[in-house]
Image: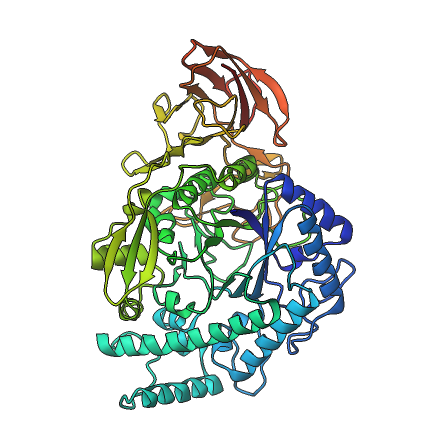
Length: 635
């Protein structure tokens, strides 16, 4: 099976009994079959609304009884609706300062990998959590993640070690360095806090030291989880990479995660930039770019984060609101994941508060993002269907532990594809035509499995700025399309009409499990971008700098630099995409229906067929507005 789902973060993991049931029903209706329980490792802070975390307080690994009851009930509710859970252990907890002079970074990263007391705390918390939630043999526990986006080797290669590890924590790290060198009969040298200035050999030794500490931490935590749950639950250590505007991780994380049993990765397209204070929802910027601006740094790059022989999950990805090209994300990523035969896609997120019934867009949340809501169930059904003949043939890239340490010694910070291209001549574009997996070997090498029949196709035209993708069961187009210019993907043709701004994503899938060429029911999605409403006017992106490289939504009142990403006035409004659609299908008669956001038929749409080709206009003047269309065929 495959997983397609969403994250819930912070307070969103702790609904009331009634809200939990409604939320589980809603997620199941969207096609969700996994929920990632993220950032629950914080104090409960119980209120009339309920807890927001699992802990009694920040100092103790003991759990809050009400939080245990609420989360356990919610996991059960999800299970009743066929939804599995991915439990995150360390994501948000910041340890309190114990000694004068100590400084604890946000989320304690990377101190929890160094400090003995913190590691004992984490092991105790993990045992308490897994036991209290009664997760052993729980049928809908799918997987466990140990440490979100954190490793020592990553902190070192990013150049942040000296600023994050100070005081007694630095003393402890220096002691570990001395022991490491002594055990390997190496001459004593100062702890290399900075990567810059080191020789290749010294950088390799330093990277190996940090990798060894990271791997030891993951091994200990994996053992703790297995002691509580047994050996059958898949466990990841930390993400292989996080790519996008901020890059983390690298090849070394394959070694860091050696004791884990599945691997995962994160990527974001046009992640928010907070120019002054991180996570300030009223001071933010986006570039308003799209997936095609640098696919080798995001989607294609992620293909090289898969470990051979292990399940692979994208446990976070998004192109968050109010990006105006975000309709590209779900269909393009879904088809790419189908062709790569990945095991899971988890969007970040559905919500991270208790406003489950908010129907306006906000930050990362799916709940009010009409653009992604118009596509989500369609993509979930396609990804989870496991259609035959849609996976690409496999290619395996072998790197030695030394190769991986050298790469991180060079500070690749998650840019796997570009490093392989520069140093080993493997172009990122190979991931469009081959399944990619990394494996361990004494020397670099590439081996490919025998070519297999596949109906999947995926291409990117950089000059035209268009993705063309699909399989026997789907056809997609995404990108910048001049008005009046016909673009085709297999049997789907799209021509944008006057009134369009020249960007669209159209995705056609089978509704009856048959190939498009023989299907009797098809679903077409073609949503525009979504905005809230400000003083009865549609919100607009505006330049946030003199050169116009950054965009924000200016506030209608007040002195904040940006309108709030978190509190958006309604109603939500979606861009209309006027177009002509043609389907190269043989049929005696075709019927086309415009659908509302809940998938209900609104009104028939006039179509023409000559027996071999169906043509119909959408979203033109006098027609019903819609982002989804059902096509029924009589053959």
